[in-house]
Image (cartoon, rainbow, N blue to C red; front, top):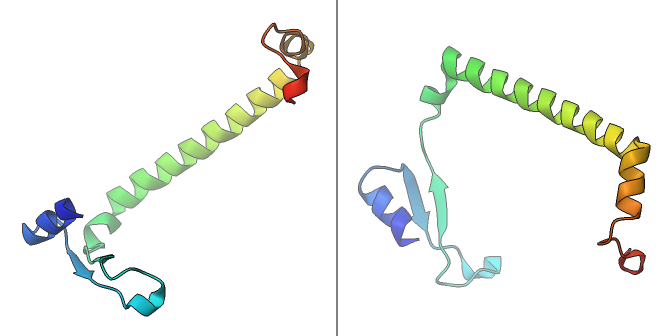
Length: 93
C-alpha cells in the first residue's frame, strides 16, 4: 500500500485513497483505492485496433489449443500411454 501512496503522491497514478466505513465489514486500517486515470488515451483508434487484434488472436489460439487437446485425448496412443504410465495410480482418481 505504501508504494501506491507514493505513486499517487508523485503523480504517477491518478487515484484517491480513502478509509471505508467499518460497517462495511472492513477493518479500520483497510483502505479503498479508486483509480481516476483518464481513459481517453486508451481509446485511440490505434489502441482499440491493437487490443481487438490481440483478443482475436487469443481466441484463435484458445480454439486451436482446445481442438488439439481433444484430438490428443481421443487418440488411442495418448489414452494407452496415460493409462499404463508408471506414475499412473488409479487409487488417486
